[in-house]
Image 1 (cartoon, rainbow, N blue to C red):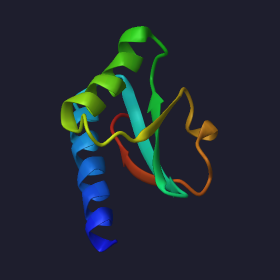
Image 2: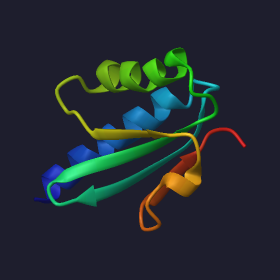
Image 3: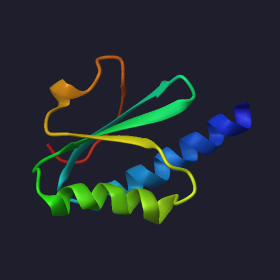
Length: 90
């Protein structure tokens, strides 16, 4: 089980690094629900290009390890108990 947690953390770290390259991403939050890792990405804009950045990042860094990704336009939409992984842009 410890190994799996390490793999999940590495996947999240790689995703954060990739998402940090985009001006469209404001913040990233995560929470394990059951056996799945959920990630909420708060976007600055709701364009298709901005949304595609998130999915492309996931496929670039971990095509075999898919996270349950939720796109939001406000941090108010993220569950209160989700962990803030990082703020990219204010």
